[in-house]
Each structure stands twice: as structure tokens, then as C-alpha cells.
Image (tube, rainbow, N blue to C red; front, top):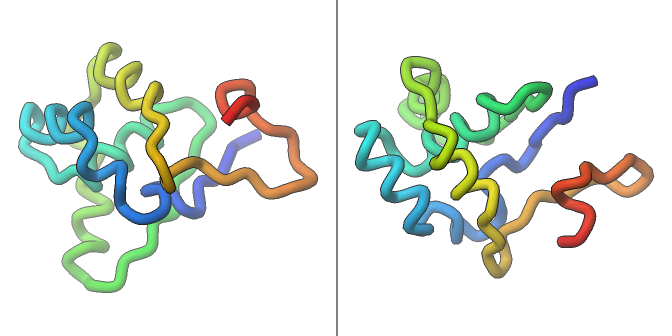
Length: 102
């Protein structure tokens, strides 16, 4: 079963300015949005469906398959808990273990 991330960038954009995201973006010459999308799709069984208001943003969203985040980068981003930015799970569905206590 795959988990679908309908709002993969969180709420309010707070995740885009996190040091772990910015460091990975600089290392891979990518935008913070691309780092967050890569973090999602690099996990087994996760599908990200980001919204894109502009054609250039849509192109950027697809440009996440030419690099891979290192294990320490994945762990750093997985550990983020930012005010007003969390992953939402629809009620009535099982909550993944990593999000059970948020």
C-alpha cells in the first residue's frame, strides 16, 4: 500500500527555511522544494502530489530524480517538527508510526 502526500511541502512554507533542507539544497544544487519532494519520493511506498501554480514550478517538481539524498540528510529531514508545518493524515486511516505522536 502506498501513502499519498497531497500536501508534501507542509503548511505555511516553514519547512523550506529549515537548515537541514537548505544545506541539502546547497549540496545538491537544488531548490528547497526539490529537496522536500525528493525526501518524500525516496521513501518506499510514498507518492507525493505537489501543487504547482506555474509551469516552471511543475517542471521543477519533476526534476527530483537525478540525485539521491544521503542517509544522514534523510534522517535530518525526517526529524523536523516545525510549528505550523506537519504531515496530515486523513481521519479514519491508520497513522504511520513515525507520525503517531505529532
